[in-house]
Image 1 (cartoon, rainbow, N blue to C red):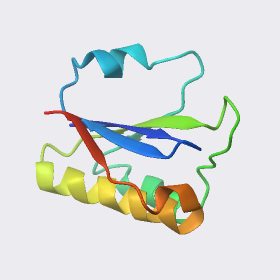
Image 2: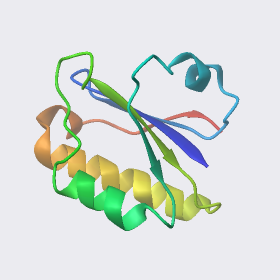
Image 3: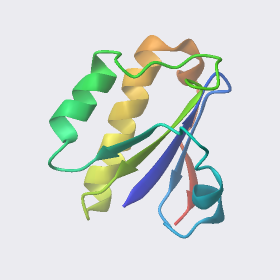
Length: 105
């Protein structure tokens, strides 16, 4: 499982593989957007990223998001993270030049 934190406009995508990571626990603010992607929700949620339905802006309600990716397969989960990054980079210039950060393994 991967907990992926996406921040905008200070474009950042950080991947947390340890569910007990202090960063994962500390960022669950009230009203936090949390998206779950797994084999059952994959088509719907990835299409939402591709069709720009997940909006990012310099406002508290839209400046970040946690995406929980759970396939029990590291390779597939990494592919999903990269898919999300590409979809965001297509729409938001700040995401184009970033490296995806591995925070904890």
